Amino acid sequence: MIVPIIIGFVALVLILGAVGYAVQIYNQLVNVKKQTEQAWSNIDVLLKQRSDELPKIIDTVEQYMDYEQETLQQVIEARSKAQQADDPEQQAKADSELQNALGNLFALAEDYPDLKANESFQQLQDRISSIEEQISDRRELYNEAATNYNTLINQIPYVFVANQMSLSEKKLYEVDEADKQDIDVGDAFGNDKTKQTTKQNR
Image 1 (tube, rainbow, N blue to C red):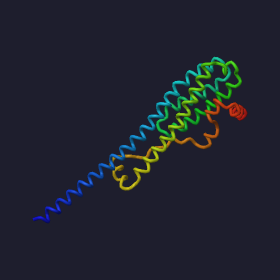
Image 2: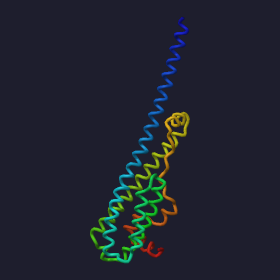
Image 3: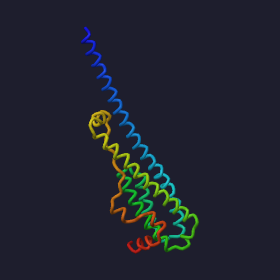
């Protein structure tokens, strides 16, 4: 009589332990998923801020650069692609195009002394440069969170619970090395040597 009770008790403890362990795994997966989503949300806020600033700088530049419509159009089209990007991979590609377009625009601005001296233009340059630096910093945080998430959902025993939760890997926010070498937006705003080099290479 006692043996069945003991067996039943042990079985109950094991079941409760297994359920508790599964709940712990579930909570860990939810936590890393939320961290990744929050990290991307932080980037998204900055992307929207940058998008709001670009029309202002385009309007300012148009007042001085009447013959540079092609360069302005490149910025406008790159901004549109960045707004339409659906995931970090697409966003990274769109950002590369936008940074290149902005780099060309600010390199051309060197040929317009009145534009360079415009206070609104200078403030917008500084604002966009600051946003780009913040995006770069938060991109690293997102990629770290996404890598931790991707690693966890592929590890045993997490992978079994992750499959039940229909969790899939997050794409990283990575700019191609070739694109990063083409133009550094921060340098384009504040480094005359870089600006001159960019103009020579156009």
